[in-house]
Image 1 (cartoon, rainbow, N blue to C red):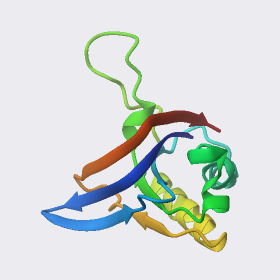
Image 2: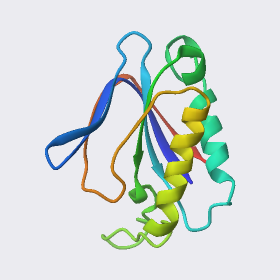
Image 3: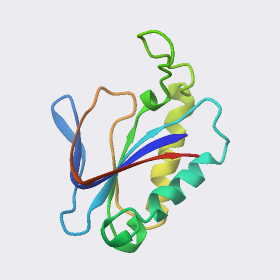
Length: 144
């Protein structure tokens, strides 16, 4: 499982011209979490991802999402598993198929919410327009 976590002051996801998820957090900051589920992920990798998203000290003042009471915009992103070593066309064969990945993304959202974190999401499998105002900019790659 891979994720790109970006510290933001606001972020949104639009599908078919409608905002389906958005966070606005200019004081605390928040995270835009682009998460890709892989074919070879361990069954409990989603739990590690929840812990990383909630507890990494990457917000202003070295606070975590949990400590800051910050929101998360969670967006499924299978393209994080694209292999680009050969040729000009990425291979997506390392990404989990939708019927495997969608419940994992739902578990991550539920796991974050169970920790009291406000979570907004995109729409799994939809063509999404993601907008964000990055702070720093501060972005990290997480692999579990």
